[in-house]
Amino acid sequence: MIKAEMAGTVWKVLVKEGDSVEEGQEVMILESMKMEIPVEAEEAGVVKRVIVNEGDFIDVDADLVEIE
Amino acid sequence: MMFQKVLIANRGEIARRIIRTCKRLGIQTVAVYSTADADNLHVRDADERYFIGESPVNQSYLNIEAIIAAAKESGAEAIHPGYVLLSENAHFATAVEAAGLVFIGPTSAVIEAMGSKLEARKRMEAADVPIIEGVNDALASATEAARVAQQIGYPVMLKASAGGGGIGMQVVHDEAELLKAFEGNQKRAASFFGDGTMFVEKFIAEPHHIEVQVLADKHGHVIPIFERECSIQRRNQKVVEEATSPFISDTTREKMLDAAVAAASSIGYTNAGTIEFLVDKHEQFYFLEMNTRLQVEHPVTEEISGLDLVEWQLKIAAGEPLTIQRNQLSVHGHAIEVRIYAEDSLRFFPSPGTITKLVLPKQEGIRHEIGVEQGSVVTPFYDPMIAKLITTGATRDEAVTRMQEALATYEIEGIKTNIPMLRDVVAHPEFIAGRTTTRFVEQYYLPQVAKK
Image (cartoon, helix red, strand yellow):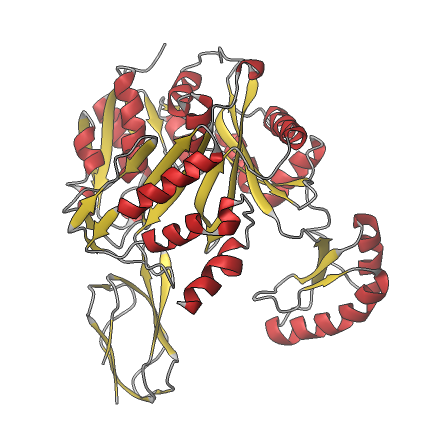
């Protein structure tokens, strides 16, 4: 499970369910304090679920993307 | 007539800073706030407060209709925009004027002209203010590039118009080198960016970012209030600023102040403004852009000049003439400002959260501008800058020592801040020696952190 490092807004979701991702690949871009924060996959796998939508406000530690 | 009541269309430390001067002058203050800021210090400082919308800036601090409605309802006669947010928005200035209120800043026409880089360049060129040559010429061929480079004078920077990350960019020292480099770089740019448009501009080695503060009244008087050295930046945002610049000579200083006055006069500028220059190692300076508002780093200018810039903004907006002359001003000592950001010191990523502990240093020669207190929640909606720390001294050395001491005891807990970075920067031998270029962070700070 990829979690949010900080509170902010989901700006762009870069993957969808079923996508294969590599370690270090950007899966999402958050916006916090007027800055774009890329969110990377910690390990390679397949996207099982994208939990948030673009525009959603998220808190620190919120679940973002589930990778299998 | 001086205003009786002013609305401040901003938040945090700068709203508090403006309110402070208004109070001293006996002017009533009106704060505006979003949902996230309901309990903020700037809201409590003001005499009146109006809710203007939900937390995201486009619903609150950029909500022109709600801000003007609040001004009308409160009976304020003028609006101070602070910095960023709506401060350089010509549409806002127009709307304020249309509502029969005074916008504390220049006219909307001037804001619009300076907001366009190309237009600003043209205006400055017409006023004989030096600009970096060649920037807007798209080049069709290597021979044309050589012709333009010849005019500008070598070395030049060959750049890809669509470039980024240094790709397609190269310093060339003579025509042979240029002709050799052109084709290859054009191909590389075309394959990387899908656009092989190339241009050349004068190469500025080890540039300094130095800006001149001006005040201009509505009666045709423009005076420069010295310069600020703002070279130390991260993510293209300033981190450390000082007045005056330890780099330029008195002769260069006078030339830059003259150029700034010419720039402001030529466009009919009014109120407080800043002309930013890029300065090369030979002290040649070039116009970068004009900021048509109060700057974040204005306190260092106030400390060395003894002027209250916000007071002058209010007076000028109210129609009063400047009663100070350029030759009456002198530099008193030295001042340094550091910006305290809610972000980590390594990647410069934001760190919202609750401030669980806040201890401010209280030595001689310290000025605080701060928008938070212990218990404040730093939300993810706004700029990460939460405070500024300014130290002054009879000499630069004294101001530097005081900054080192002040940062050593500045404590913020609960969120990450860039205080560890600031401590390293002001302790660095290159900073102590006054050798600060725009490459300072990547050249000195980051390698030092990597070693730790």
